[in-house]
Amino acid sequence: MAYPPAPWTLQGYSIQTLHLFDIAKVRSFVPSELEIISVLPGKTLGGIYAAFYGLGSTLTYSELIIVSALLSSFLCHTGERHLA
Image 1 (cartoon, rainbow, N blue to C red):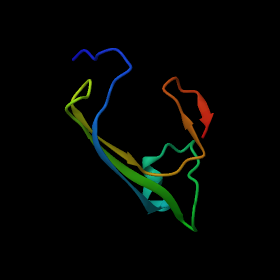
Image 2: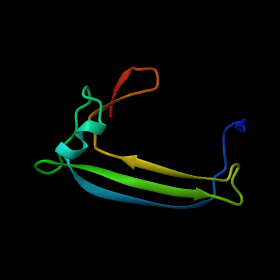
Image 3: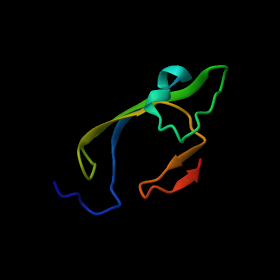
């Protein structure tokens, strides 16, 4: 599938939730070189984002994003490390 050029117009609806996760349970989902930030003892912040983009959008699609932990830094697509 060829994507249209940016910028895209997106219209639809979404929901975002925040959750406290046990750091011990999410550690395996996070690369070991990244630091998980603790917001409470043994807990980090994560969440879920679900969206549907429909009529009036450049493309019609749904997406689901899962955030397993709050991090102090991240690796971009080039492999460079950046502070969050």
